[in-house]
Figure 1: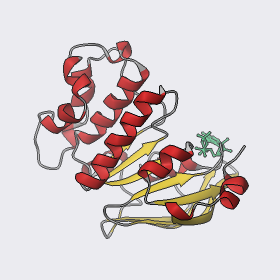
Figure 2: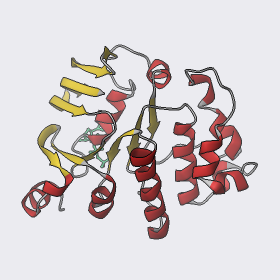
Figure 3: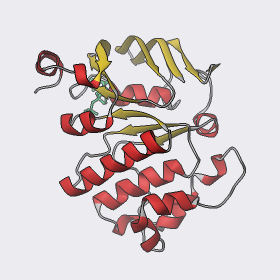
Length: 231
Ligand SMILES: Nc1ncnc2c1ncn2[C@@H]1O[C@H](COP(=O)(O)OP(=O)(O)OP(=O)(O)O)[C@@H](O)[C@H]1O
């Protein structure tokens, strides 16, 4: 479904992503992992069209989307839950959710019931300001906002960062449900190993902007963890 080939990216003179080849099959959940600063968020920004690439190709559903705008990538079915959630604190929960609607392919302009079914707290707090929600509720809102556009691929950047353990587990259950029951393909950046193991089918490890290992989550062994993940 998604295929990155030979991606190179620079911040000015600084070569940050090196010849990256990464593939995600329809229906799977891939965890992109690696220590701080290895280029995970940069890669997601490249995927979303928020950063230009120097060379390489991004293919989505058999189409080269490397030159597509941010808006066009949302329209073709890539949903993004950014690091830090980036919800609008002064807008209500409902207004935050509605922001995704114009990008829907089917022209529907109503928040799908599914979003409120997955996150009942968002329904209860529909009229509250985004900024009044707890961290966990804001994360649910950020995921809900990405789902509003009915994506085929959901990309999440560290969805558990700064969130209470009981909510982390709830968010894990929801990502699993979206992936395994609803069939959404998921690309997840995650540092927490138990969470990655719970939701991921496969892992891809980055180190200094390069892909250094990948495989089934069950094969993420102590040697790899020590070499590329432990700080
Ligand atoms: N806007 C920017 N301008 C210049 N360099 C940047 C910029 N953003 C990130 N970098 C650098 O690019 C490298 C990769 O950063 P990136 O944020 O992608 O890593 P990461 O793996 O997502 O780390 P983290 O887990 O801390 O978010 C780092 O060396 C970082 O300092």
